[in-house]
Amino acid sequence: MFKSAACIISGLGLILSSFFSPAYSATIENGGVIHFRGAVVADPCEVAPQHQQFAISCPENNRMKTHTISYDEALRGHHPHSNLAAVTMKYLNEEKTLAVVQVDYR
Image 1 (spheres, rainbow, N blue to C red):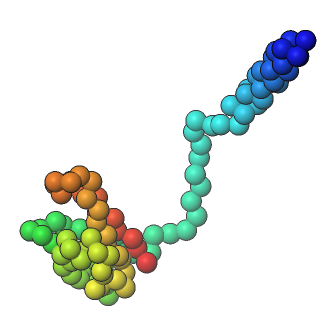
Image 2 (image 1 turned 45 degrees about the horizontal axis):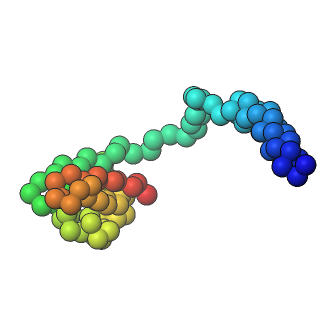
């Protein structure tokens, strides 16, 4: 008798869970629209990789001003010219042949 009651309870649990699955999956969307309000107030910085450093050219007083940041500075998160943008770098492999460079504007 105890075994049949356990089977009935687990069967009811399975039936109840099947009712909740369609409701949950109906709330997941595959696409959508993102609305943006605001304006871009400055041109973006240009990043040019060079030998063991980056040349960062940013607009400043209606002119492009160029600074250099070494790969080591970018890896450590050190930004000597961070009033407009911060540059960070992270290697993707152990050989240090692939990296992601991120520019965060202030």
